[in-house]
Length: 145
Length: 112
Length: 98
Image 1 (tube, rainbow over the protein chains, first blue to last red):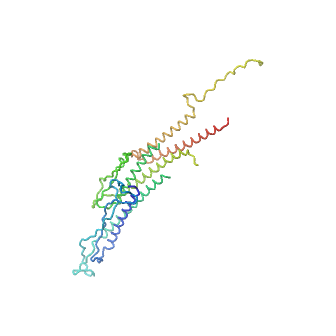
Image 2 (cartoon, each protein chain N blue to C red):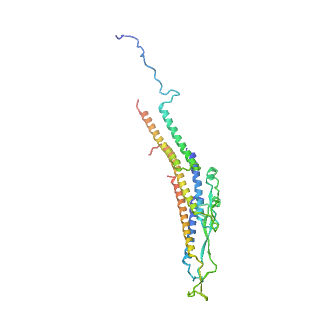
């Protein structure tokens, strides 16, 4: 795997972290949403990451990828939290049921905020990695001068 | 003069770039559940110089494991990223100097 | 009184010219040149060793390695310039009409 395809590895990291950040932002924004299109309160979403080799237009299939140790990352899926929503006693709420309980999303905004910071940091790390690899490629090209 | 040092430098750059690839892969998978940090044994890869064999990356021991089984430490990877980049930079500068000296010897120092 | 006709006696007091560089006794200039080249090669080997030590991790001191490399480069550049001057001086001498 040449240095060029490593850029794809970092790019996959950036894309995955961005997706994760988007889902976290959605969770935080909807932490109090009681009505959704599917009916019922908002359900917390999470990204499932999985390790995956990257393919690149320039690389050949026979490229030995360091015995499989150099892999990118992919969002394999989005998991939706299907557990029972939290019931909060709010009798005056328009969505309250007969007993005065409202089904609220199981979202902890503080926790997701911290996760968002983590996602941002990971995103930055991937940007740094891509930048470092780009520099190494540039240095190799500079040997020609 | 050119051969011994330049060959070593070239191999050094090879191993460094392989190591950097592994670091980039670790960073990309910093949040993948169950993913274990990988690394090369730099000196032994460098010493097995002329065989041109595929370098072996293995799992790193002793890193704290998070709840989802992932043990990537972004601090460690960021440090390695910077170190590999600087060493690569140094090696490429040294090679460039070797090449320049040979070119000058060929041109006998005359700039035409 | 000058002797009008007498055999031309050999001029005394002259000694045959000594050849400048006798076998086994190098001329001063030649030894200077050889010494310079040897010093250049020694600097080069020092630099090669320093780089090798750095690469294998024996000596991680960056400044030692870089300084040794720089010394070798300067010695090389200097040696090249000296060599060029010598060659052009030689050529100029060869061009002199005798």
